[in-house]
Length: 336
Ligand code: NAD
Ligand code: WQD
Image (cartoon, rainbow, N blue to C red):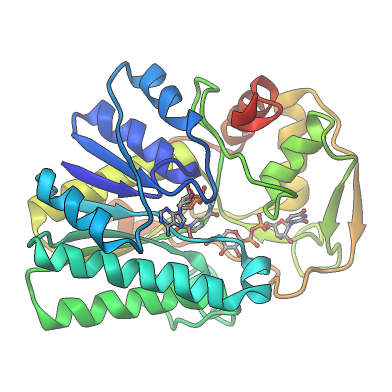
């Protein structure tokens, strides 16, 4: 059985579906600090399977120990974390505390129950911002926000653990910019409050929840002056997790890979693609650059291809189509 922490969140829920469809037994865990209970019914509806779930905090040792006592867990995919970059600058202690205490607590329980297969949700944000693009796994690391440092430190903690005991097998998955939603339109990204990320902001403008998009900077050194990122469909990302778990269980080795499309698109490229996919006009205004942003980054995704036989199946148009289907079917997210 595979344990997913942060299972009802955006990436966790899509991965849960993929694992069940692949034939894995899964148990989900979440404290609902950034997700809805309705996700569980939707997962059952999509997969036609029972979704085993426990409401708990990864910082709660007793609940985790109890879970491991009652279930034969052979691997863990650890999504549970706080993830808003701007908020992490305002509330660094909450981020260090939740993301690092949660990880340490979970690893302590895993060690006690001899479960050594672990997948970390890492991020492109662990690459030093001065690296040339595309980002390759061996490049220098660093970060620009407390959130980013929690991912950097999480990787370091796990590397020290691996060095201490060769039984540990860790997949460090560095995601680029996940967007899109399940093709059923039943699950998708549902951020609380004002979205920080581009795609949920665009979809909320499209359903009339927000007036217009603010584009952060029109004078970046990119092909049209707007920021360039590597958008990856959440369905491709979810499939990457299934491949990573297969790899840990079968190859019995650790790995560090980028999960990105390997291509960069600008904000305006995404807006145009979204308008085509949805038939909706996205009014926008170019405003000042957002502090901490950089002009462009995208992945070199060739190592994931080589080690996991994984490459993307969905392009930007498909990402926009699926994001739109999700948001238009669920204008208020899971709270409809
Ligand atoms: P999300 O907020 O939708 O999901 C995270 C889930 O973890 C939420 O359901 C939240 O309730 C839960 N959670 C948080 N702290 C918890 C705790 N202490 N105990 C139990 N549950 C807890 O975020 P997401 O976009 O699905 O991201 C999943 C993971 O991927 C995170 O670790 C995030 O840092 C990482 N990541 C996300 C992105 C992105 O852009 N979405 C990019 C790179 C990495
Ligand atoms: C994308 C582009 C913005 C919103 C963040 C984290 C990173 C990772 C993914 C977790 C940029 C522009 C955005 C808006 C805009 N998360 N933009 N108007 O900044 O690449 O990465 O999420 O690990 O760690 O830093 O993603 O979606 O915020 O921005 O113009 O309202 O869209 O400037 O060029 P980012 P994003």
